[in-house]
Length: 207
Image (cartoon, rainbow, N blue to C red; front, side, top):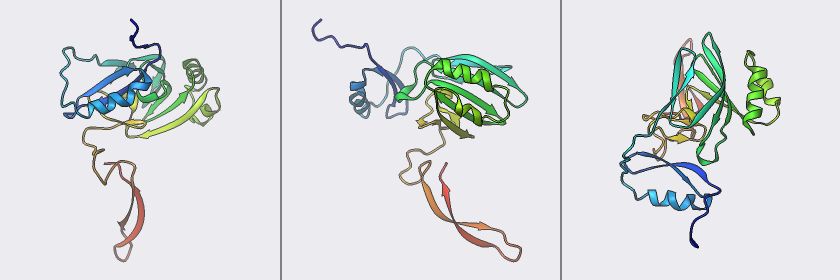
């Protein structure tokens, strides 16, 4: 057909309907903005088939995700684990070649230019207590410290993605003033030996 669209090059991203339903979109890069604009006017979409939620194995337990992920390498013990992941459908041009470490409730991950480099970096560093040297490996892109947030690739259901993280539903990312990562100058109370005092500090909004 003369007017048939060429889908040889596509990109992934996510949009939300007005009612908060998360939709996974794959389209041509040049159509991305147009589709996002259209979904501003979509109230709700009822999908006849529920999207599969995948369980990524971590020793005796697993981690759910709505993304298509291959766990190439895994090692765990004590209070954490480290894995090499390939995310097949990373949205909005996120990097899908990842070494992810989870320790005592906190996540850190490192991005690489290829999955081969990520696997090689995992193989060299999976038993290390200090991971700073992983940043010297070939193909390293950047390090992301998630603290108590979950990394974006472990988002489930309708959890919104905000940059490198996925947020619990209770986090008010749409608040007009108190948005995550905005910084505010506030009076913070601290206890002195003699009397309570207040000092001016800069704090980053999370909730």
